Image (tube, rainbow, N blue to C red; front, side):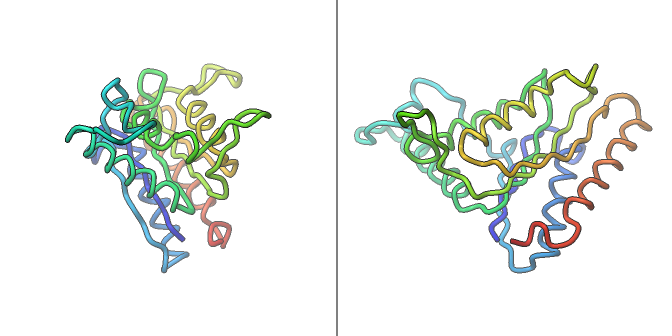
Length: 206
């Protein structure tokens, strides 16, 4: 089993999502001792944001790249290799201003490549990266105002992974973290319980 852990919070040791992704991965490894783990910290090693200068790296001919573009191409290929080789992705997705962290969006821009992780056909888009499991650790300071309200950070990653062909997506949620110390600890305790239940037995051993 190849496990890819993606952390995108900028809060370091104070991050709820980072503590929970670490717990998910630790439990996976405990049940799968031969698993390999790759950790990609998008705060410490943030991909460059999409720009005109980056477009030749993501598509089209690779001739004539300058030194900066060549370095970004190598980084992109590393991100893509890690993603394609992963059997399980554990992705920390905190909500920042209603969306996902910009570093995580930049990572998505690197791995979502036509002809490599998806393609267009006469019947519409087709994902090429199926067969993986994704565990999303969703954290946010607030809570849904009502049951029908959208958590846009979750909606974004859900749409992206399904577009790439991944349908086995599970959520661990730590919400209401900004409602005071007691509420934060209660939310984290509930999320830890979700992690324990998630990894109970051999469900992820395949």
